Image 1 (tube, helix red, strand yellow):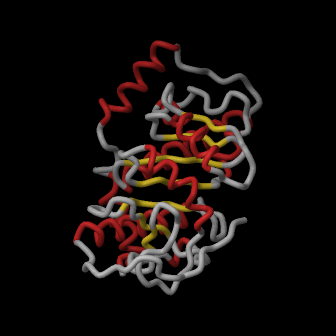
Image 2: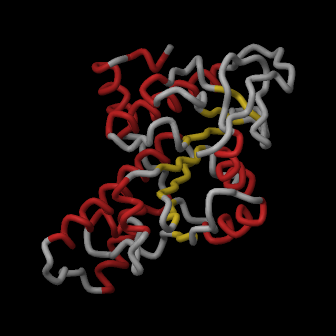
Length: 258
């Protein structure tokens, strides 16, 4: 699907790893493991990237070629805005795959984490003309706050990056038409919880439509009020859910922390 960047050090890295970076690595590795656990991965493709705390223009991403359930805090690769590896790494990265992430990171200072997946339900709903319908409580989280970007093919260019980020605006979630889902977060936890909510909303819609009968939708005023309630004044989502999700992972396999 895309070409990997050779595992060559392009920038010297001499400073010791900070506690903040160590924690970011643990959280990002956990997100990869949770995605695999939920069956949202797509072989070795799609990515979750996170900005390195205290290092502008530096990001963490998965080693290209490893399955998501093989990702650990220690094997995440540090890269720059061009997808070039920073420091020494035995792993390659998908530099062209990071291009979409780089565009969002650079356009949005609050996009600490960018999650892009090819989950089946998200792709299916992205292909529907009306997109995500305000029919379920999960979908109402994104009512009036979900971006869309039309499919432009495999090659992601700077020009498309500008169009995509313009379409995204200040929103935290997007359906990429014919392609997949995207969420951003001020934390890894926020990006993950938003993705989980979006995927479930898409799954609910598809199952409801499969019944072949008209769907009941909340009245417009109820939908708008509920959307505001669910967004809770811009609170950072995931703060309560994330520790519970990490405990779940620890019970299954704590190697993501290594």
